[in-house]
Length: 262
Image 1: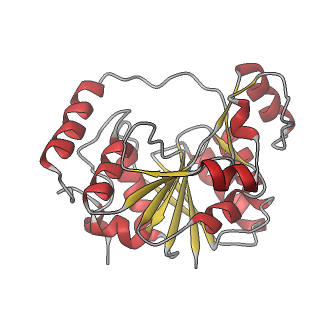
Image 2: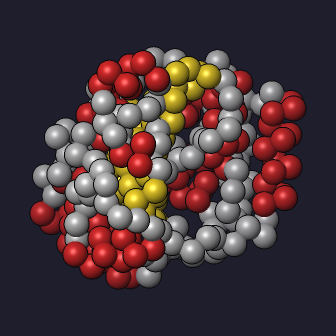
């Protein structure tokens, strides 16, 4: 089983650096790291080159022109470049607990995609972590929200992780799937522009295709750095695309990953 870790980013190299550092501290390294860059400034490319020079695994920088929030397209391009057969998606503001990749490998199974959780770092704690480079956070750290999502437990994970067909709570900041399954539904829908719902719509098509969802609890832990909310001016349009996929039980999108496949 070969795992490709895809990290989305846009003009926040400080957070990306911390996220990348947490990858190198993993008990199990992925086969490769793919940085899905939605048009960042050149300083992000420089960071990726610097990190790649010392990384024990390949690091691929998948960059596209900055033409607004186009995370669906950015992810498709990154997935098309990935050589692993299993994809873990995180955002560039997610810092990983040291067993993150190994935990995802443990729970990967045919016919399922995996939705993980994350703990939220408050603004002060996020600033402190970025300043010090500290990504190993104690369970009782001040400014750490959703503390239950900081607890790693084999027993609780086996007892409380569950299978579902629901779409509530889908977030690709901690999300894993088989690459072949993504190709079957033609990846992310590039009709989505601006923040919101491209992850839920992708999950909806996977479910319509017969791929089930596993909600993973108390394993594959991630810490989400605080940042201002993205503008949501296209949310109504994106909601309409999602609702059409649900109502029509669509399995594939028209504008997807196939345009980048060789």
